[in-house]
Length: 546
Image (cartoon, rainbow, N blue to C red; front, side):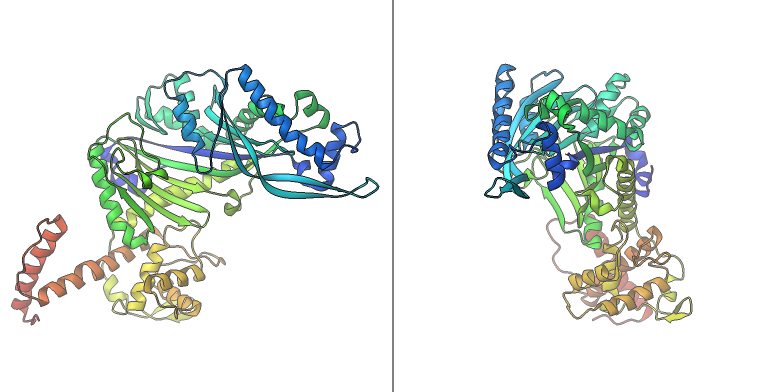
């Protein structure tokens, strides 16, 4: 789906594609998460008896799970590695895969501690079960790294304690790579992105299948193919699984959706994204924008530094700019990937925040929401980057307006509070799902540092913006939205006031030609030329400077 940003730079692109990226599914046994359900499952497993349901027998299960895992791994020459807190398990697996060819199945097992559900049984003096208490404790988790013929490298992370909660981690790029190879589409894949595609339209069609309803079945089949026979079997063998009726259900926990723009020139991509990031970060109040300085040339075909670990790397392989905006459990990111790929990502860290439902059958709805977020992010970046002021806007802004039967005041750009309100509206323009009056008030307080700006002040200022069609509140909702056209106008107004008029007047007021800086940018040269011309213009029309 095209957006304003993609359309603006289409001539510089060699191709583009949208793709579901990282997918994290929760695998859970529904009966195992309530006291009555857990007791029912135990009785099914033990011949309709819960005589052995006690802490001692429950603690034997994770021990047996660990012994079976290590015995199987030793018999099949699969390494088992203990991991410390903070280590990136996926990076360990990628380093293990480098230079190795592995077949389908489990090729590596990593062990680390994490929080999981643990049941405690309280019995009376007579031996009757008085209470089943569910606790959350740090226990060993086993990450089974698996090579799947359809999904490539996937991970099943499972607790050794009943009810054997698990997470399945897949990657859409791995799926697209396997499907493209089967379809005969040539490509070059560097890390987690495609940098060269012989048939961009064909690969985009394959990637699109992960956004359709059929993706539900593909995900379910991939999970079922391995979770019972390669992971759960160490806690419950296949006969025990069948006897106890143990069956996982799946829900979406995290998901990522990326829009990937492949530039014909890596150097031109750097210039484009660097310019956009510099112009928009102040207007959007972006809290995280970091550039890692290394050598100027981006080496093709080499592994790039991790976005999380890059902070502590002293000499990364190349410059990397990360543009990140957080909205609670939602994140929007823009960054360069590989040598020539510019990627925009929409990430949901917990799918409950989207309010679409989290069951696996809701996966297409979640992807559709993320795709909309990514497209809106790109469009709003372009709107904020390139502003536009229609004819007559500057004359109409100070005049009163009408919202239904309510008369509203005009917008005076000379007042700091009104400029702060416009800046806050622009900063919240990319918020997924819009923003509330409370969000707006908090943003204005954050920008101005004045705690006296109340929700009543925010509602009044938003009413002014609505009167000038710079903000919308559709229907009976309480959330406000900034349209792309309004974002362009607000961006242009703020830029004109803060970065054109104010510095020019300050420069013209001092007619002395001071020593120029050693390193001049293009903007510095433009300001100097405008300053000299404005001084001549003021002299001709009779405006005193000083």
